[in-house]
Image (tube, rainbow, N blue to C red; front, top):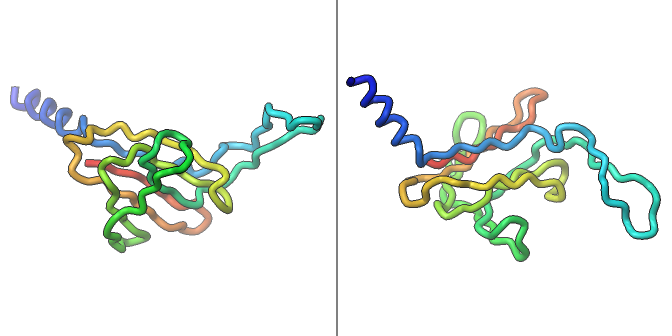
Length: 138
């Protein structure tokens, strides 16, 4: 009975938490584009790119103008940085290549009434591996 109660309490306490990690590459491989520009007959391709950064958005998906959150206090940790982020962040956006033209938008679905903190965890490259970036709400 004690074990059952412990498992239930553990599940309840983690239900409002969320952790989202950026994919290391996007797209996973070179990807042909279906759209053909007006008056052209060629073929388009989006090359596989490595993770280069991330941001947090408060606006709806791909909405213009975007409401981008820059976060609060930063903490230097071994291998990178932790940045406190607003609890009302709606989207975690991962960027690939040299700029922001390739982006992966991940919707955050944590319980904003129960979550106490949200942190963007950025870990720098080690050797040949791409960086690690996570958005963690507890």
